[in-house]
Image 1: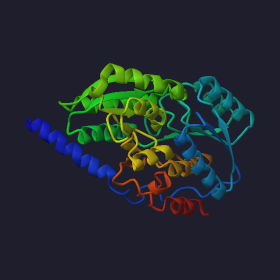
Image 2: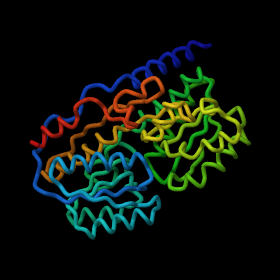
Image 3: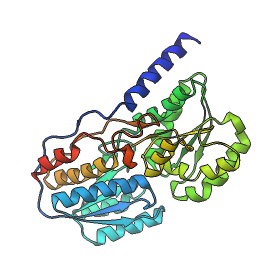
Image 4: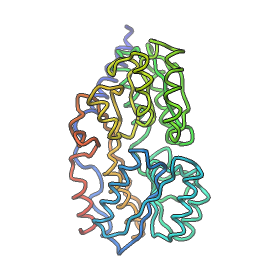
Amino acid sequence: MALADDAYMASAKDYIAKVTAPAPPWTGPTTGPAAVGHKLIVYISTDGRNGGVKGVSDGAEEAAKVIGWTYRTLDGQGSVSGRATALSQAIALKPDGIILGSVDAAEQAPLIQQAVQSGIKIVAWHSGPKPGKIHNSPVFTNITTNPLDVAKAAALLAVVDSGGKANVVLFTDSIYSIATAKTNAEAAVLKGCQGCSILAIEDTPLGDVSNRMPQLTTSLLSKYGVKWTYSIGVNDLYYDFISPSLQSAGIDGDGYPRNISAGDGSKSAFERIRDKQYQIGTVADPLRLQGWQAIDELNRAFAGQPPSGFVNPVHLFTSSNIDSDGGKNGIFDPDNGYRDAYKKIWGK
């Protein structure tokens, strides 16, 4: 092995050790505006079947109750037209604030503009390619773990687990700018591994994975056979529908290809990783924490203050740490006292 390969593998192993360690102490805000008066908040889910989107909504609903606001949800039902309809319905309700649950800000730009012009404050989760301000969008702030770090963790898990010999299929959904950003970053990491290769990049809409994944899996097995050793998806949802085809092909749950997700950390993903059934890792978002953050960011917007700027550190779950930091309950819920931190800021 060349020295460059040794150095690459050593640094990859160090990174994986760091991102699988128990979650660090609270690094989010400790100051901010006290709770403003009563508000009506509408959460728009890109697709009610997506566990990540639902986890954020659960957290935001919990936080809204604490801060004393009314909270409603609308389902975009996994389609562009469905999301547009939900956003139009939300605007008609004349809420004080809207939370976009993975609704791409570019895709729905005209309606978002309309909402903001009518005085509605908008906070987003996974609606742009990076945390904070979304380019050319009036959205107050976009909440996400840094997707490039998420992608790095997922790709380096394949590198380390394979001993630097991963042959990878990447699953993405180009409708979402955040998904494209992740996939590009995964590809860049894998290209840095001299013994690894990218077999294919499959652009498969998350809204249609239940229909597409079984046949796509069979087709990829037919094309690549045992050469296909790892998959990295931009979301756990791909692996909800991959196992029947792998089972039909006689592949054991802990066999190859080994599946890794660069977000969001769904309940079914935690079960698969724990049971060693067709998934070895997920770079989970702290969904409930990010729901609480969405309510806090709206409170800052209502109070005329800037966003908090908080970005939660990356955390990778594998079978070795699956029961820590909320993993026992099938979620990444850091044991860092974030609820108390936000309650203190709000004066609740």
